[in-house]
Length: 431
Image (cartoon, rainbow, N blue to C red):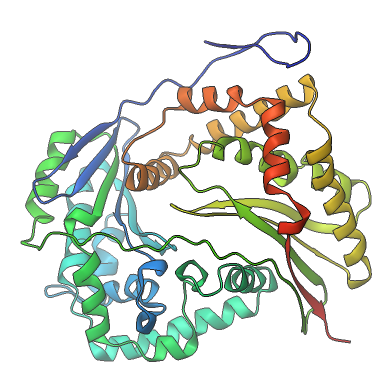
């Protein structure tokens, strides 16, 4: 049981709740540098993910979009499997196989019955070390990725976020679009792909995360058997820290029915000591709960928008906090005004003890619920361990959340939500 005394200026009743038990995790590093993280237990369904510590920001100028393109291309054939056999290797036993690319990592992940863990690990190894990248398949997949780029452009909410990061991180690798551009994708070839994978797709730059009712010693044996090629030592990641932020205010005309707007500011990196406080503040302001301040003020009170949300994105050396909303063009200025007023309230008005208690409790509950899914938990734990090389138990996370004070939240609000730091991007309908 965790006891927390709420309130800053006057006593508030003690809140008692049952914490999720600390999950027993098992960790091992192979001689080739591959890190293993296992979350034991659960039902008969198991999960596995192979993380590569390389993403869009690790691309050279002539490689824009290649990290994401490789995520597609590795499924197109290996030295011993054709694309059909890759896709059916897990699907034939009822499993799911997928992958994603982010700015700082690439991940291949799967869900399957526990008895097929070896099959999944062997398949991961085949994909990342034995893909042949046939030119015919590369040319075909270029059309697929270009179609994906067009699909994003057809979605204003997706397109405005990409466009905002283009300007926010202008001139820096974090500003690169994950999908690349049509021009950059067309320029990719097998030689560029093999150069990128040779630099980054090596065991010392990877983490295998598994979850399920499987003995960890078996996972270690299978990983040693399949993910142990002879490779050179990994070169250190030469990531340049983003420091040249310049606020901007840009309006673009689009063939949309609605106006779409993003207001953003720099946030803390994933290693910053105040990141928990900013996460709590962001959740209070415009998190997923219908009772968030922005939702209650702008959607519930006035009915001005269907979607308004605040998001906090962390990177290893930078952060971005942004608010997005879509609304009728005639109401855009009013929604913007109300949004800025809520940010001002966070800067000027300290949370009362009950408000702070509710904010903490809501955020802690959301974190607990998000950890209920075994696959989601594995992916979350895996990404955290990839970058931090350590884990945070649910108990430790709750203690961090409940240690944030109203004074700290007000200090963070004044540090982050300074009007002079705001950047704006608006997509408005063409007249």
